[in-house]
Image 1 (cartoon, rainbow over the protein chains, first blue to last red):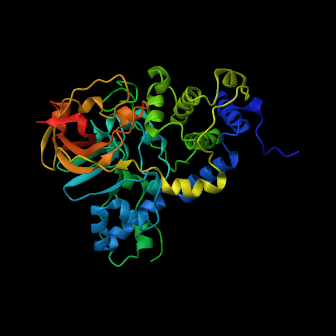
Image 2: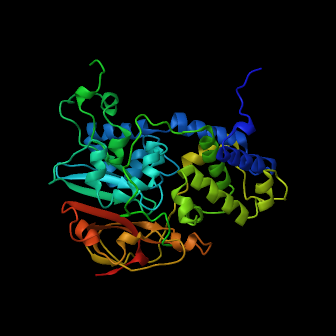
Image 3: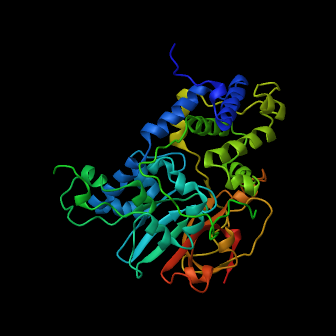
Length: 207
Length: 219
């Protein structure tokens, strides 16, 4: 007999609690388990940081698009069909030689789902949420990013419904690269601000 | 409320410890927790502000010892009970025993992509002009409401500068408690690190919050 299903008596207590809740709501006709499947599939396979990376790569390649993204990120991002829940009101913030941007939500876990997907655990957990606003340099060092003391750090605390996307500086040595190739240099963390864009030698793709 | 969620500047939680190649979910039940939470929210009985307030209303010891999806589920149980969809008896038995209040709508699988793509914009037209403009010096009020608020403690009673005027947005402090959307202008307000953290602050630090108009007064 195949065992591709879970046994209730083998579940940890919290898994059992969630299963019970789903069962109660389903039996009452309040939720549809198939809808849960579609939601999970959407956030596990369709929406993720590749969306945001394409936005950043386009901004690097197309000055008009970068300008639009600066002025009206919601519309500029929507033009690439990345819309929706927790991305209704977007703002793109651009790193410069003088200023590095870092995004946090100290009050909960606000995050631009439509361009980055679901947030990582550390983004939602107390260590990051408590320290990003008081010791951002120390936080960045834990990510392996040491910025010069003279670099201004701008921390954006997402206390309202605006969601922030950090646009890194385009790495040198990428002249003539396609948007597709540039997008590979843009990590999730770079779009939160806990990393910079990867350098060209950090990717192993043949030219 | 001055609850466990208001973390900015607190100490003692240790290193951030990012996980390499982190998966979206760390257990199968987390997938269901996400889906159940979104489906239940789609019934339309409560707002995102009410659900945030339910999460931050967990006892601090419970909040800090729970993972984020655990916080979601604990708060969801509160919301479902408050709005008559499940009873304590249902939860204790793990069975559907009591009759549920009628939902406004039920999220069907075929509607999920459209519902997620649409989201829930919460900007609103404003009948009154914005009180502040970019460049204005402002001070955040020293507010300590017992209900929901989005003005973090570290940024109360601080002098800053208006950087941007956004749209009118639903006011969470009232909306979380079923007291109406009462939209207000929202501003990005920037503060020097030293204004917030005082002596020893990183001299190259600038912190911004997005603040509803009633959180602010002219400085």
